[in-house]
Image 1: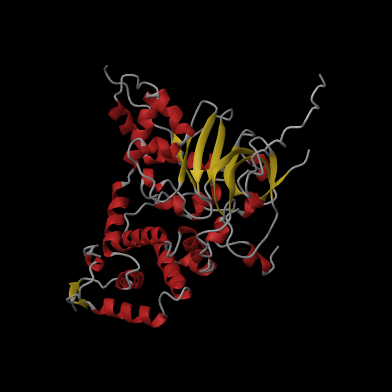
Image 2 (image 1 turned 90 degrees about the vertical axis):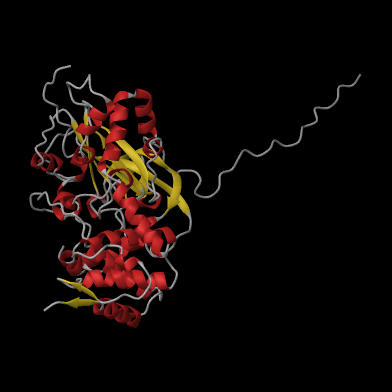
Length: 118
Length: 216
Length: 110
């Protein structure tokens, strides 16, 4: 008896695809830098942290509105993640007086961060 | 000013009012804005009244209850640290302002301090309104750059081998410090423990006072 | 960096890390109008007539001099008035007339 040719099954179903903004861009433990942007208008990333390097301590869930857009009366719009960022005090202040262990935490919106490549 | 704070919340005509002192410019502006919005049915008179009651009902005693329970019940503490808002909601403490809450536990290696450098973000649903000093420049400017000097001004000295960790609120997350339970409180009831927890211990500028020795 | 750009680049409320005085442990009981103002802020945010972030931006938009000279709730009510005018919810004459009307309710004894 002739063996039946190995007929391929129907193509496998695609794996679940996440929508825009659903997936956090950064993960806990990743090294990031707060951007050096200097926009006019409302901002919620203090100047003392611009350009500083830190580590993502946690991804804040759920996604939320960009507070810089909310400030202009947009009560809806694209939602992205905020991240709790850990930064050593000695990274922020060159003349820091205190313990070298001391640190700062701040929530930053996704569009204000970039990954530090190894 | 000795007028009833609810006077302006009604929308019927007013008879002239005698007083020692007319309301100041900003007081007049607030009343005018509120009455105009009520007249246009954009907000309700009852809503302002109700929100004043909400604000009056939120005091540090709420936070103190949460802290005392966390000291006594490790399972509750774990839930609280995993989700601060949900932990508070177990006490019926609602978060009317849509914020989240992260509870920051003080340990033998970390001492937490909270600040809002940009404005005055504060865990109002569980602590009530912040003190003036929290909202003014000296605290906001210096807590992030010289936290130990700030702590010293409150009489708090943290050892060098303990990390001082400052959380600057800028978005929708608020913070509450879970201070360390003081020594000598093993026999204390939950109410007794809550009575030791002041507002400033939950901001992180002071530690909970070790109570004086007392008979068992 | 003392150019005019700094006025735009740094918002007047962005003071983290700036030199400042020792902390004075000021506390005050809110005046009735201040408490009403706070309640108004919460109600405006609830309705999204002026959300909390808009309020923050509105306070910043007062500029450095006003941010420095007006007290906390004075800044809020000024910001609310400005935003309501900008949104066309109120016009300046509405506010002017109503403020005069409210003021006229008070009869001060000589």
